[in-house]
Length: 223
Image (tube, rainbow, N blue to C red; front, top):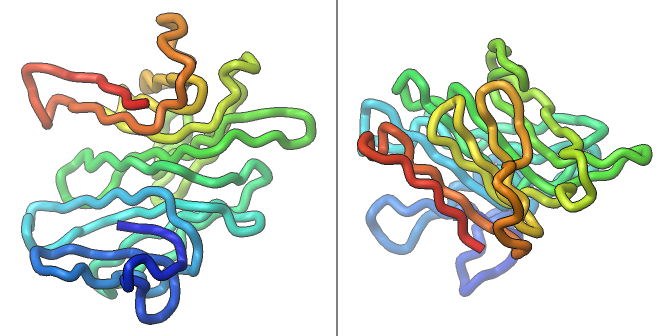
C-alpha cells in the first residue's frame, strides 16, 4: 500500500515520509518506507519466489517525477529498505503503473514495464513507457531500464497511460485516457487496432496468463 506524505487516519509513517504500509497478517499494517523519499507513489508490484510465505523477494514502486528523474524504487528484502532505481531522461514524466515478470521463478523481476503520463518535449509528443532489464526491441540489458517512449501516431492516441499488465513477455497491454489501448507483441508497442471501444478513461487492466489459468486467457479493462 502506497500513498503520499500526509496523515491518513493516523497512519502516517513515523519518519514523516510517504506512506508505504505492509500487511503480514496482523493489524495494523507497519510502515516499510525505509530509504524511500517523501513523494507521491502511484503503483506497487511485489514478487515472491520459491520460499512462499517468507516475505516478498522483490518489489517495485513508481510515482511522481522528481526534477529530471523518473521515480522508481526497488525493494531490498535483506536490508528491508527501498533502493533508488530512478533514472534521468529528457522524456521523464510521472509514472502511474509498474508490472514485473518473473520468467525463471526465482522471485525476482526479469522483465517488466512502467508506464505513465504523456509528455511533450521540443514540439514532439510521446507516451511514457519504460522497460526493465531488456532493450525496448529485445536483447538483454541486465539491471537497467530502457526508455521506450514513443509517438503513437495520432492526437487521439497521445494520452496518459494509467496501467500495464502482461500475460507473457510477448503479450502485454497498457491502457490510458480516452480509451487508449496499447499492445506489446514481443517486438513493439502499437495502438490496438480493433477500433474505438470506448472514449472513457481506462484506469486499470489485469491479464490472466498461462500460469494463472492455463485453459484460458482473459483480458479485462476497467474504466
